[in-house]
Amino acid sequence: MQIEIIDSHTGGEPTRVVLAGWPFPEGATLAEQREYLATHQDHLRRGVILEPRGSDVIVGALLVPPTDDRHCTGMIFFNNDGVLGMCGHGTIGVVETLRHLGRIKTGRSTIETPVGVITVDLEENGNVTLTNVESYLDQTDVEVTTPSFGRVSGDIAWGGNWFYLVHEADNAPEVTFENRDILTDFTTEIRRELDKSGVRGRDGHKVDHVEVFGPPSVEGATSKNYVLCPGNAYDRSPCGTGTSAKLAMLYSHGKIKQEERLVQESITGSTFTGWVTIEDGKIIPHISGRAHITAQAALLFDEDDPFCWGIV
Ligand code: PYC
Image (cartoon, rainbow, N blue to C red; front, side, top):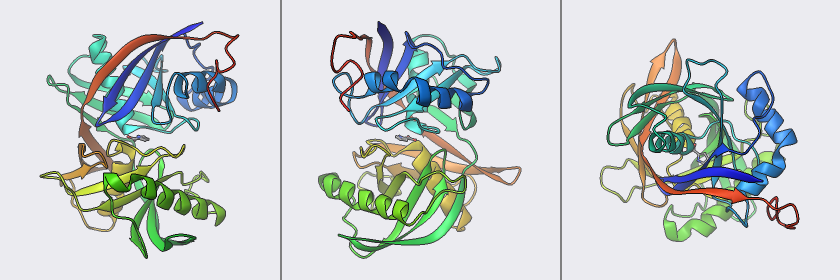
């Protein structure tokens, strides 16, 4: 068996787009297809994402036919832990992959995801602006006490995935690349405490991404972030859904206005530019960045290989 893929990275964060060889999941909607993938095709997710073919950092995107042919494609994201709702850096990676294949034109296109339809604007130079699903602030000043770092306070917001946005902590590590391991410990403890206290997003889903902020180090940036993803890897990019959640939080607190630009720097020094518009009273984030292709390959699966479906 073989699965055809194209790899790219967006601000340092890899995306592996699956083009062929993976049977389309069953379901009338993308949400149903994501459920089918999680239930019946988890071995494929593991085989494509985990070692020995992949790594904890890669986000996969399975391209599926759109349920409405006005849309350019459907896409279902997954990572080392399971399936994802949306993925901002991954969307930019998918668009760059489609551009590489000559399957998308510059200008505006729409793409279906399990959490809604998003819009992408592709420029001649490869820059992509994605208009995300509605994002919102869900809970404010949620406090947890971590065993090693003391008291932490933050807001919970939806940006296509669930985020805990740290705004105050007794002993938060500084947000620097050198501190990435201790930032992983810090955010993992926060997520564990949130889960233990039964804190959930309004749809009952676990709050599985944690975002911490610090002063920027690249010129023109507004802030630098560290984002813990569900499978314990940290996002090398500024995180499209995390930046969307942050924009929704800032707008709801009256700290930014419509169309006001925020340049979010990642822990690796890459940046996304983001802003919000208000449409029918809903906060709609826009995230702009670009991806680069790194590989085009066929992954080979041999049933006799004890690690055929990944090292778990
Ligand atoms: O860019 O939205 C994002 C994302 C989610 C997880 C990793 N990257």
